[in-house]
Each structure stands twice: as structure tokens, then as C-alpha cells.
Image (cartoon, rainbow over all chains, first blue to last red; front, top):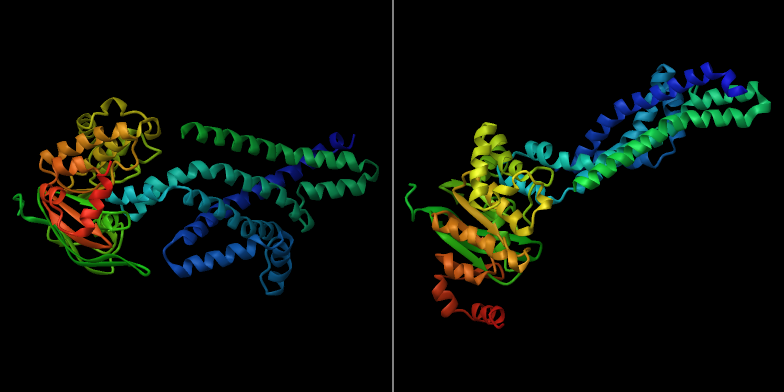
Length: 214
Length: 249
């Protein structure tokens, strides 16, 4: 059967999908934290910049972001390795989703918590790091994982841009095994589920733990 | 300078607007060291805003506020330092919900006053004992009753060894049977000579513990008198009207 005959190929593609996911998360999460901090900061220009960036990227199809990184940037003279461009596109697109998840978590912490922290003499930095963020993180982790699940599925776009990941492997195997299209695609789906189902369960487990603590 | 009776909190021509609303209208008020001042008035009179302005949780548009001779800094480390010396108790307790009762009381001393953990915990247990919740020290705030939470909040404020304590309607969010346990702690504090500014509707507390009653209406201080004078012989029509409404039943 085509799945078992091509396990090494699937596995190679699976690892590529996994590294797209991990690399994009590695860059998009810190960027998301920065954007979220800008959006809640008292400085108007930072807020405006972050808002514009968030709204543009969040409301643009991911394919357009990829085309920008793979086609427009080279025209402008910026030629990057394909993998680099793919991670860049995924990072730019995903960071605002991380940022929004973090921002909603911070906004979910009652204002009184920050007031109490300030009234015992904490600085702004201490208030944020000792009181607001620890409470925000509890409610933020499950939505962050949901963003990662969406990112996992979004890595498939890279398959259309010269990256040999799971979706790309599916296309190659279909070309070679036109009579077993369904089996090939089931194989691709299984490997995606190998990432997304554990992530979903992790989110559920964390959500339950947060619920008990409250 | 530290003698009882010397001015500790001084508000001089303090003004604040919320848009059209003149919420603090030319407030002049001096509170002496060791004095217990109760601020009462109808809702929207500006009494909570006044209380919050004293540790700059609310900014003011004009005028000056000085604490212990020092003008309120506008922001930054100097403001944080000053706030550490001004205890604040909120209507909705605002205990840090991710910390245990004990950690709520030790967090400020350890992170702001840089006390050692042992020192902060020893002091915290004494304070929790004093407010009667020492046996709850390892619980999370959500596991406590409202009255217990508010007493922990008082201990948290006391742990910073404040020179003045602000109470912003400390019993308004409590079930009736829990109000007294909080008021008793406050009466104890007053007897120990703590300088206190208390926004409250608890007339019994005002009579028992206050040196002065400030009656506010429409952003102004309308009366400033001893509790006996104010409750038995209010001068202004606003105060008479207010008292007749709250004492009717």
C-alpha cells in the first residue's frame, strides 16, 4: 500500500512540517508578545503601529503573504533561501494571532489587580511581571495552542512554494500513484493529526487545570 | 515632625474633571497624623475619587497633594516609593488571585521593601493573626469569604508599614453578616493611632472611630465636623437631606 511503501518520504515531509511549525512559533511568539505589549502601551504611536500591522496581516490571505515573500521580495532585490522565506511568511502572518490571544488574556485580568499592585508600591514593570502576566498566562496558553494548531495547518501553503513538507509530499505521491489518491491523502491527514491532536489535548488539559485553580 | 497632630496629608485647591463633570471641585483638606477621617456623601459626590487621588490612582487636573510634606510625584519610581507608604484597601478587595493569602501579604515587603522571605513571612503571620485569618494563610483568596478576603487585604496594606491608610468603601461589597468583622479590625487600627481616611456608609463606624466626618456632595466638601456635630446637628440642607434618607429605616 502506498502509505507504507513511502513511509520514509512521508517522514521526511513530516519533519519539514514540524520544523516549519517550530521555527515559525519560535519567531512569531516573541514578535506577538512585542505587538501585544505595543497595543496595551500608553504610547499612542506604538499602539497605532501595532494595530495597523495586526489588522493588515490578520485580514490578508496567507497565500498573499507567501507571494510577497517569494515573489515580491526577490523583485525588490531581497533573495532569501526558500525555507527562510517560508518561515518569514508564516511568522509575519501568525504573530498578530499570537498577539491578539495575549492581549485578550491581559485584558481579562481585572483592573483592580494592577491597582492593588501599584498601591503596595510596585513599579509598572513589577506590576506587569509579578501580577498581571502570571494571571494572563493561565488563560492565554490554551488560545496560544489553538493558534499553533492553525499554524500547523497553514504550513501546508509552503508546499505550494517549493518546500517539501506534508502537503508537498502528497502532491508528489499523487503524481506517482494516480490510482491511490485517497490513500495518499489519508496518509497526509494522519501525519497532520499526529501534530494537531496532541496539541489540542494539551490545550484541553491546561484549560481544565486553569479552571480548577480558579 | 512625627508627633500626633502635625499635618500628614494636605490637599490644596485640588480639582478634577471627568469631561463635563467637575468631580473634585477646589478641595482643601488637611489630615493630621493619627487622625481618623470618615468621608461620606451620596454616590457621585467624588468621595471615592478623592480617596484614590491621594495615592494617585486617579490623576488630578489642578492643585497639589502632599503626603508627609512631599508632593505626589507624577510617575515612575518616586511615585511607587510613595505609594508603598500609603496603604489602600479597595471595595472589591483585589487580592492577587494567583497567590496564596500569605504570598499576598509578603509580595510587597519582599519585592518592594526588599525584605528577606523569612522576615516578610514572620511579619505577615503576625498581621494575619491580628486580623484573625492566620489559619487561612495557605489558601487561595477565592477560597475565603468576602470578610476574610477584606481582612487579608488590610493585612497586605499594613505589611508595607504605611504612614496612612486609605479605605475606599471597604464594606460595600460585603454580605451584612461580614461587615462587622472588617469594621472591628478598622476600629482596632484607629485605636492604635493609625492615620486613616475612610470612605464609607457605615455610620456606626463613623460615630465610634472617627475624629472627623467630611461630607461631600457634587465634588465639594460641604461639611467638616466631629461625628457628634455632624450626625446630631448637620448644618447644610444637603447633609440633612442625605442623613434623613439613609437613617429613615
